[in-house]
Length: 116
Image 1 (cartoon, helix red, strand yellow):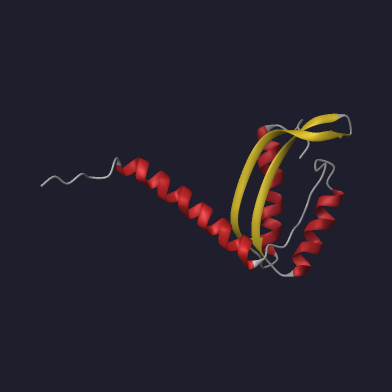
Image 2: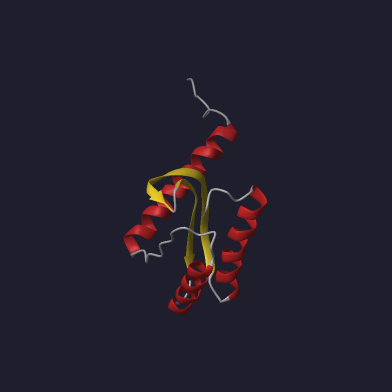
């Protein structure tokens, strides 16, 4: 997204695309808002942009509808839709579960120690 969006506008635009996916029979697997990042090269005289990664499962016609809407939206500078193979899906799941178990371990405190 373009970096000049306010936080509320960014959340509204993000919700618009997640609703488009779920409204057409898709399922959101994971969302990750990266926030403001530097671009590799200037786009329309802008050097930063707001990044969002949405992992979803949907039929190919949802991808077409999503791409049409993103091309029409002036707030989106660039977008990329990719299909993940089974290895990439498994990797993402392992990585997310590893992060979740690490977060849960922090909340539960250190592991108990046994002395005999």
